[in-house]
Image (cartoon, rainbow, N blue to C red; front, side):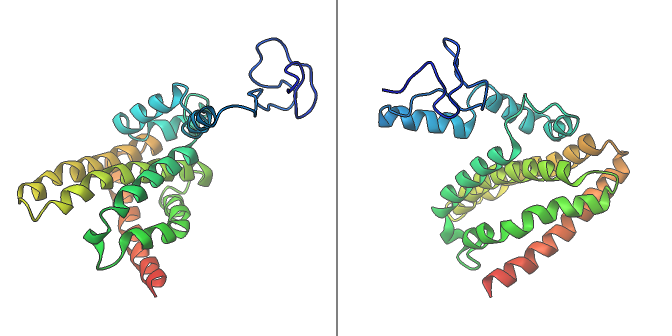
Amino acid sequence: MPDNTHCLNCDTILPHGAKFCAGCGQSTTPTERSFSGFVRQSIHEFLDIDGRFAFTLRTLFLKPGLAAYEISQGKRVRYTPALRLYLVASLLFFLIFASFQNIYAANSAVDVYSRAMLVLFPLYALLINCFFWKSFYLANLVFSMHIHSVAYAVLMIIGPLEAMESKSEMFVFIQAIPATYFAWYLLKAFKVMFREPWWKTIIKTMGVYFIYMAAMGVVFDVVLS
């Protein structure tokens, strides 16, 4: 049986009830536990289910740009790490859209997007840097992860609706709701993140969007070829 009074990694003496080692930071959770316990712990750590995840989601969807802005100001501890959030969103997106891939059979968008994101993801942050040249790339990278996480969520709503277009034209009009939300979200997020006048925000956001869409088309063509 493991010695619960010492850290198994660095042998630091552990106070009673300690969940992490004060010396190296390793969790004190026993490695010898049931499979169900292991799965629960893995999901907990992956999703960061400790209150921050729910708070991050509420802020992300209801207050566009605020999470990225506060993280850039050093208020990081209250939010789930942006990369972890992005990985969860992208995983759900690809799992759901794998079921609807016939919608995009003409260009195999699901498969193409998964390969192209390695190039497009940092490119979006770089484009933001070009338009908002006083900003910092790492902060824009976090902002990019948040924008893409929300975009995945919107696409997960639009995809199934698009699949049901053949059953009723009503589903075509319903798609306008999440699409309009994302257009508003994008402008509001840029406004909150970079604190510039609305007219500058609109022009620069549209500039980033159109160049990014053009770059996405080029990258898709390269990946397809």
